[in-house]
Length: 451
Image 1: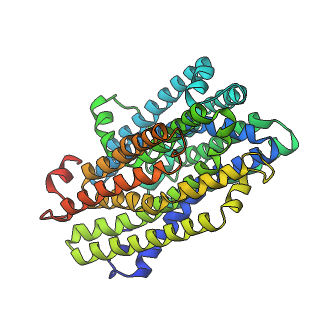
Image 2: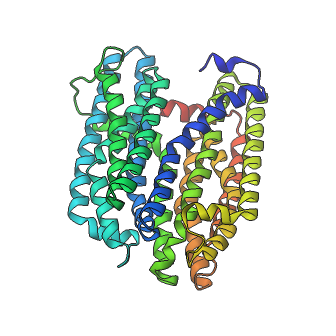
Image 3: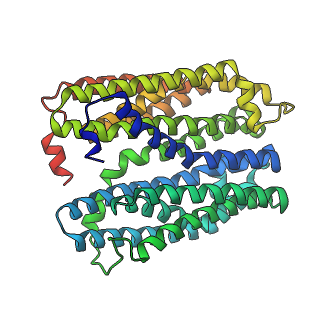
């Protein structure tokens, strides 16, 4: 990767990184959307609502895995770079063991308190039973969710990035195939969807385990002395990357509970139309940001201010262009998007169309916020990235949603995201001004503190 980025800044060079990154992010999320489509048309719209209510649990599993994996992979890379392979393998093995123990605890907790968890997530009398079924089955595969992503990250550290894509592709194919069979042929309903979701992650995990237990990998499992300091040191390095997963889960819980409060349980059917589309939109924007980041980071290392500006501004053009196309499509053809998950004959179809038109306006700024957070990380300003990411997802967006919902009796709930993204964008621009005003793009103290 580093040798490739020594070429002169160009659109071709940027797209060479952005297109694969965005494609991988979309692939990672697409089978979740397809699963929702199969549940909606193969079971019922109420069943889809139950699955959507339960999705924050999967967001938490993914977020925890990202939180631990990204930092551990960075520490492993540092150790390998210093020629300390044993240290890298000890960090690798410790991370896997900690994740396995954590996932076992999560499984036990959900099995005993699935109903309480479903109620907390926003389930009502019509959706509670299916939500409990989904949560209990998926929780049995918690270790697969958490470890499959961890090993996917680690194979990249082990210089096998293609295998990471293969593992994700295997999960996607297995998920969609099994969900179709379980729902349309075996008629297992929500249980079939949950089982397909878990088995897909199991297959992905087996692909990565086969690699690390085989002869091709350099990183191997080994005995290790448990070091809490190493674990705690890895956590801050994964905060920015895991924030989107936690944010999506948090906002889903918030929206489902507010919709239940102001409009009743039946109206929760509207939110999956927005949440599934938002997942794809955010992944596209995150892909553009991730494609830009290594190019900017290498330019920082070279002290090439011109290249830094070039890649940031061109990525901004891509984000704004993508946002404009997506919002235009949502405003002009909202019925087509809504019909993917809801029947046009549904009593809530027109309300879903109206909600989508309003919520889609927030996409105009969401991509800019995601890009700015990635840009700060690429420059080495981790604190600015965390402040924007966490402030956006856990303060400005939820506070805007809560405030406008209560001030308007629920009527402003779909426009609230635009307000939250707008406030986040203002924070991002202030941070951008401060970051770019620094004498050097990469603060030496901060860089040294991470090593």
